[in-house]
Image 1 (tube, rainbow, N blue to C red):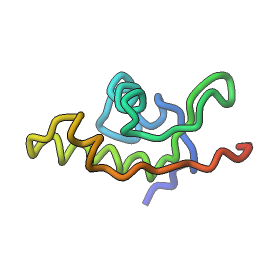
Image 2 (image 1 turned 135 degrees about the horizontal axis):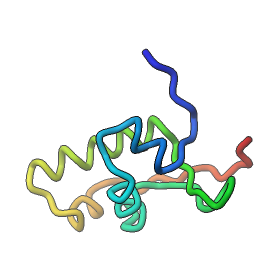
Image 3 (image 1 turned 90 degrees about the vertical axis):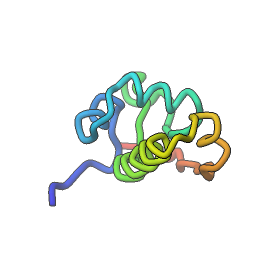
Length: 86
């Protein structure tokens, strides 16, 4: 299995998944996807595998007919530790 970095930018996360950068940004802005704001050159950082799994879950729920508003209500909120990232 390919090794992914612990943290990724939106662009990197889009490359690892079947989601585009705009979708990832939209889900982040709606609170569906947690990120660490404006680190390293002003880019948001995402926990790579946790974000990928969450994106897949959102996709499955949308495929079953759930709206993004409903998904936001049923998905648990997660918090990312905002430690300094090297």
